[in-house]
Image (cartoon, rainbow, N blue to C red; front, top):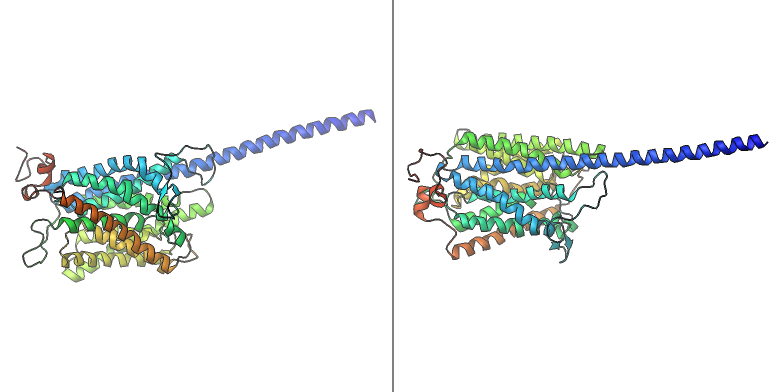
Length: 446
C-alpha cells in the first residue's frame, strides 16, 4: 500500500507539472498568434497608407497634363506643399480634432495635440496609433490637393498655402469628425466607407468655391460668354497620372477596411478591390461614349475623368453594393462627369481639370448611390435614404461655405489672384522664377 500510495503521488505531481507546462505553451502560442494578427493588420494599413500617399504624384501628373506648360512648376509646387503643410497641420491639431472625444454635441471633437501613446495591447483589429495617423493624414492630403486643379493658372501661391493649411488643419478634420470620429452624422446613421463625401466632396466643393471667387482664366470665355477650349499641354502625363491614381485607390478603398485578419475581413478587402475596379472602368467607358455622342468624336481627357469619377462614386459604398451595382454606379458617374463639365461651361465657371464634376458632383452621387444600391448581402449592409441625403448635402455645403468665405477674404485683402502680366507669362516665371521646360517657353527667366 505504501508503494502504491507513493506511485500515485508521483503520478499526480507529474500530471500537474505537465499541465502547467502545457498551459504555458498554450499561453505562449496565444500570445504569438495575437502578435501575428496585429502585425498583419498593421502592415496592411501601412502599405495602403503608402499607396494613398502615392496618389499625390498622380494628382500632380493629371493637373500638369491638363494645364498649360507655363504653369507646371506652380502646379507641382502646390501638390508638394499640400503634403508638407498638410502632414504638419494634421499632426498638430487635425488628427486630434477628427478622432478625439466629442466636446460639442457631435459637432466638434478634441483628443489633444499630436499622436496618442501605444498602450502595448496587440491582437486582431488593433491598430498602432502611428500607422493609424499615417493612413489618416494621407486622406487629409488628398482632400487638400483636389483644389489645386480647380484654381490652376491664376491663384497666388501665398493664398494657396493659406488655403492648404486651413483645409487640412480645420475644415476637413471637423467634417471628418462628424462621420469617422463618431460625430452627429455617424450617430444619424450616415455611411461613407472610404470618403466619397468626407474626402472627395470636401475637395471638390472647396475647389468650386475657389473657382467662383477667382473667376476664369484670361481667354477661357469669349465676350459672348461661350467657352473657349484651352487644351492641356501633356495628355500622356495626364494619362499616367490617372493610372497612378487608380493604383493608389487600392489603398484608399480596400485599406479602409482597416483589417485583413479573419475570413470576413479578407473577403471584404478583395470584394472592395473588385468593386473599385468595376466602377472605374465603366466610368471611363460611359464618359467616352457620352462625349462621342455629344461631340462626334471620343475624347481621351473626358474618358480619363470618367475613370476618376467612377472611382469617386464607388468609394462611399464600395463594401455595401454588389459587383453588378458597382458597374452601374461607375457608368452613371461617367455620364455625370460630362454633364458636370458642360454645366460649369454654361455657368462660366472655369475648372481647368474638372475637379468639381469628378470629386464634387460624383461625391454626392456616391453618397446617394450607397443608399440606392446597398444590400444586406454585401459586407457593409444596407443604408437608409434620409441619413445618406443629409450627409450628402451637409458635408459639401460645409466645405463650399467655409472655403468661399476664406477665398473671399483673401480676395478682399488683395492676395488671391496673380496679376494679368503674371498670368499671361505663366506662374512658373511670375511666382517662382523657374521653368519646367527650359528653352521651350515664349517667356523665359532670362
